[in-house]
Image (tube, rainbow, N blue to C red; front, side):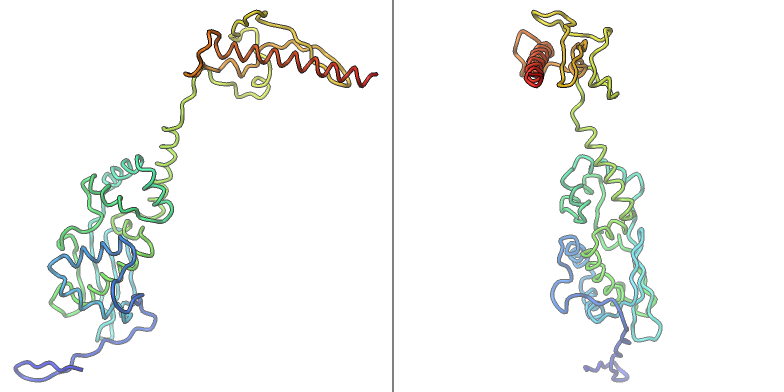
Length: 307
């Protein structure tokens, strides 16, 4: 190991105490992240004028020196094992969005079904970053001053290697669960998904075609039964308004006073209908004709059975 010299003595830097079961980076070399949001987190931090100091934390992150890592609303807390017996306490703060700011984001998501579907599927669409920006918000820190950091170690530099190690492990944590990044901004996964589902349901209701004409009855007997005499019955061309039809079965016959089926009362003419006879009247005539044909057919079968 290299030795360092100052004006008074030579010394050998001490190795950190190894941690059993520490949080170890998944990669031994190269990038710390696979997903775009984790990569963006690292790229954003390395673009700040602290990039050289960040590199010292990579070895700590890859050797499993971070003993504990917790992500809350607006704050990350961690325990990082250094050369001393007691792990150092690390805190990283990033402003959590206010409920009003989150409401503005949710309103925009209501108009983005593809982004909503991706989030409900556990993915973070890249367009989400622009959506936050359109609300005057930034999903990622914009400057190093957006991050308030503190470590209990005696190192005067900030970020120290302990803070830097946590930075890199956060990228992998965001890779595994993108909702942790939203939690850091103040919205828990369950709360976020619940609001997304509510927004998706509301959008489905708003975009659903609206009923046209008279609402259909909800009562089973009224829906399938004949119209009452007080119901609006369209005039039948060439027929009486309330024609009488006979229905027969193989074991008994009985007449039923059949008016227009009530389902026709709520129909409106579609835009493609071009006949001088309204769609309701045309269907009523077809229903009446079909009823007569069915009656004749059943009557023929009945006579065949009797013979």
